[in-house]
Image (cartoon, rainbow, N blue to C red):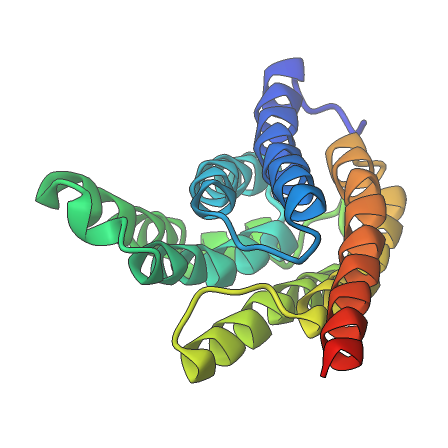
Length: 215
């Protein structure tokens, strides 16, 4: 596992545990409702997981992970706002949540030469693999950009079919990247989601078909 200490992997696995928990909870409430739901807990757990995985990416000197989390993190916060939870948080906590990733990015880039050497000239990650991994993370993150655009258009936090389809394709790319990187956190974390993604697509299709038949 390329020499990283066990505690670093522990942080990564804990982050994936939060991501798996969000999918599991969303899957359970969706099965009960017989339609795809976007529960508040999904976004709360997403923030916890993203926070930890961002730290994991920094400790692993993995720019692909950092990039993916930086983009999706603020979409999680936006969905919290749509759920009406953001305004209930204390100002101090909201400030901390908003500024932490920005402060971390500024810290990492305080010395551009060191940042470039660490993340783009890392002997453990060839340039082609960095590009492949970053592309996979961007693709995987596009699902939340799509979810944000769709939800904003409909003025509610929802998880449309396109979100789950992009999740499947993006997850496959990240698993491939994880295999090249010999990264068990990425491989195991993404593998769990496959079943949930497929099941949500099936439930969404079934609920829409039933609604169409009733009309």
